[in-house]
Image 1 (cartoon, rainbow, N blue to C red):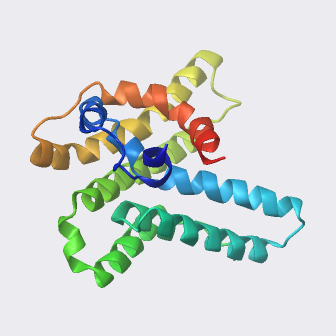
Image 2 (cartoon, one colour; image 1 turned 90 degrees about the vertical axis):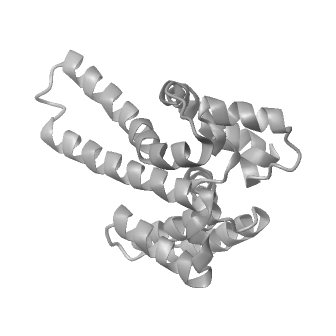
Length: 212
């Protein structure tokens, strides 16, 4: 639970960590954008029930994100997620479009300003490479949605499109991390894409259960 919530591996056996790595799901033991997005969504919804304004909800959510990041140790992956989630919240508050690549570049720039040596950190490299892959998959998915209208696509083709849109994020995250994974670990897990497709839908309820 500590590994899932805060990325802490101190109480996890080395053999267990190795199994996660071989299966290609070691990212589950690192705080990622999914953790913070779920956290911010829950907090936003709770504050909405209190009839707080959008700016007030954003301010309180930012405070919770900062506290959560501090509890998780402000590792590179956590800091990246915190910065990008904060930018997304601010963009919603000021009614501006959120640009993923710009958020990735800005978060990398800010992290490197405070610690230039972080560029050699494995967690930093894997976090940003996977996020870049997700950003590309989101762009492709957006173009697929624009090209194929729900009214003009037949049901069978629509099912195929939805399956493709589900597979693309895992595929591109895996693809973008291959060079770093090979250089650091000397091997890659080909079936990790399939495993991630199975596990990803379970992460949200699992994380929510562990957090509460």
